[in-house]
Each structure stands twice: as structure tokens, then as C-alpha cells.
Image 1 (cartoon, rainbow, N blue to C red):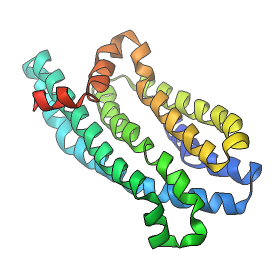
Image 2 (tube, rainbow, N blue to C red):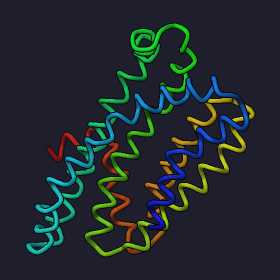
Image 3 (cartoon, helix red, strand yellow):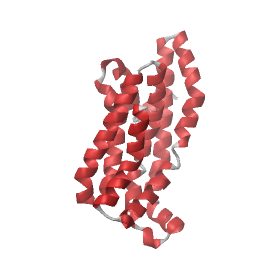
Image 4 (cartoon, rainbow, N blue to C red):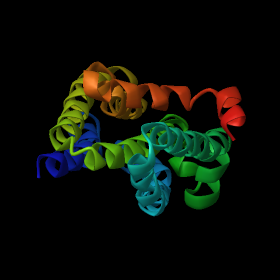
Length: 208
């Protein structure tokens, strides 16, 4: 329940704060970028739901195999999300013009930033399955709440300075914090290292 409330805050509080601190036009431009960025978020859920049973079964065989499969899941999530985010960032102006018209060009600047939140969403979904499998329910709830708090604080600081792009920056940072805050918890430290290792392209290639 607590995680659900925090996720709702994640998804909506930035747009509420933009409306209160800027105007309705800014909300419209921001919402467009959010919609285009989040349309991909069903992918990590579909992948992890199909792969997590094999990963959990591996733990019954050996701890080594368990962590090897987790590492491959994180590798897949990281580079799949980068493969989606990079072209969207590079083509953001053209995408906005094509889908919504020149009058929404402000959304392109937000899209270039916000789309990178997807990398941490993909990893966050995968690591959530790990936390649930290990029965670390409180840790899962805690990191979501921490991410929501960070998001609110950064929105207060960044929106007055960078406007809607500031809200996008706040979202990316808060998603990063939410995903990797578990590195500070001893019993989830090893899993966090696996996620950090997934950003090494050479390491991923070797593991393949």
C-alpha cells in the first residue's frame, strides 16, 4: 500500500507542481514528453515476469547460478533501455514535430531528459522482483518512498530554475536514487553491485 501511494506521487506530483509553479501550457508540454517516455514501461514487466521463475529456481541449484542469472537480467534491462532511450533522445525534436506539431517543441527538451528515467525504471522493475523473491518487502517499500521524497524536494528546487526541464531532471535523479539506494543496505549490497556492473558494455559482452 505504501509503495502504491509513493508510486502515485512519483507519477503525478511533478505535473501538479508544474501547474502550481508555472502554468497549464507547461503541464501540457511536460505531459507529452512523459507519455512518450513511459509508453515503453510495460517491457521490463513483461520480461521480468517471464524470466524471474527461472532465476528463482536457479537459487535452489546454487547461489552462483542464481547471481549469474540475475546479472544477465540486469544486463538485458540496462542495454535494452539504453537502446530505446538513445534514439528517442537524438530524434526527440523530430518525434514531437511529427506527432504533435511545432507548437509543442518545448516538449522535445523535456523528452531528451525524461526518457533516461527509463533506464532506472527497467532496472528498478527487475530489482523489485529480486527484493520480493528474497522477501525484502520493507526495503522495496522504503526505496520507493525515498524516491518520492527526493522527487518532491528536487522539483521544489529545480522547477523555478529550469522550469519543465527541471522537473524532468528531478524525475531522472529520483528514479536513480530509488533504484540504487539499496546499495547502502548490507544485505542487498551484492545485488546493487550487479546492477552497477550491468553498465559495463565490455563486461556484458564477455558474459554473453
